[in-house]
Length: 238
Image 1: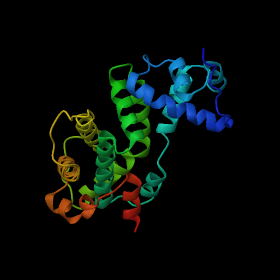
Image 2: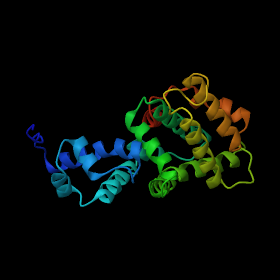
Image 3: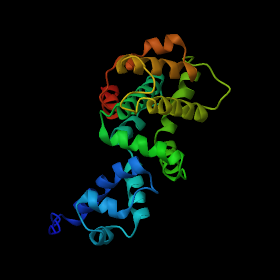
C-alpha cells in the first residue's frame, strides 16, 4: 500500500483558489450533481478533511466559483466609463462574439469551462446560468442598451419592435448557441474560419438590433483582431 501523498503547504487563500480551479473543470464536465467533494479533493491533491476546512460543502464551492466568474472584468469598467455611442455598441458585440468563439474553440481553457458549465446548467436546475445572467444584466447590458438608444437617436439604427434589453439578450444567446456548435473536437457545424466567422456574426447581430449598413461599415470595430474583450476596450480607449 502506497503512503498517502502529503499535500503541498499553501497559504489559506492559495489553497482556497487551488480548490476552486480544480473544481471548475469538474463541474463543467460532470455538472453539479455528478461532481463530488471526494473528486474535487482528489483533483486538488488533498484530503476531503482539508477541503472541508476551506468549504463546508459542495454548494459552497459552487457558490464561490459563481462569485469569481461573475465578478466584473476590469476592462469592462473602462468601457462603462465611455459615453454611449454606435462605436461602443459595435465594440460590445465584437468583444462578446470573440469571447464566446475563443471559449468554444478552447483557445482560453477557463472560458471553455465556463461555457460548458453554463450550458450544463440549462439541463440541470439553471442556477448557475441564472446567477451569471443576472450579473451580465447588471454589468454589460446597460452599456449595450444605452449605446443602442444613442445609435437610434443619431440615425445609425432603426427602432425595432423588441426592447433594447431583449435585443441584448437575443444577441447574447445567438452567439452563445453558435459557440456551442463549436465545442466538440469535431465541430457540429462546418463554419468558415474563426476570423471570418466572427465578422459575419457581428454583422448579423448588428443588423438584427437595427444598425444600418452604413453605420456598420463606418465602424472599424469589426475588423480589429481583438485577443480578448479587455484588449477591445484598450483599443477603443486610444
